[in-house]
Image (tube, rainbow, N blue to C red; front, side):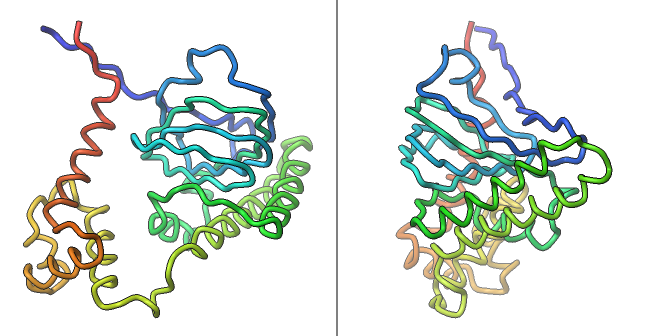
Length: 248
């Protein structure tokens, strides 16, 4: 039967200032009337959420998460997500595009994506909450040239804090085993080239390793061979593209 395909909606995330950045704080006691809230979407920029109160049930790239406050959530523009439900939520949310983002942060965000939401201890939450509140005060002023530069700087500062929060959950590079280092290098290459390179040997050539050795390292670290990770990455992108397809 013929298939009707819709593109996945892209949320523009309310960039009223025209600067490529936005920040706001909002609250809901429970999920509003369903409709666009439960539809899968992408954001047009890197988006960050500080869950201050309540809980949210969200699906990100087909993985469901039940998140309780306080927590930090980062979503890459490539990631498809949808809200399933939430309860008594207060959240600060901000977003920034590649052009406005500190160039050093772009690679770091790629390194931590995809990543699960991060629960926060009281000290880290308090620090992030104060920083977000300060940025919101700046954003609430008239959006003229006088205030764009400070907001740009402070939003980048907030992004840096989130990167540091996520990085704290990741083992430092100097503590990684040889197998973990090879696996990380493979994953970096996979993220960039999965649409063109489909064979394990393609990646071993890029890393200047034998295919057998690379495969052994990846299997020791993850429990699965290189071919599995290539297949899963291709499947994920196919799911993203087909998510809104339906048969008539």
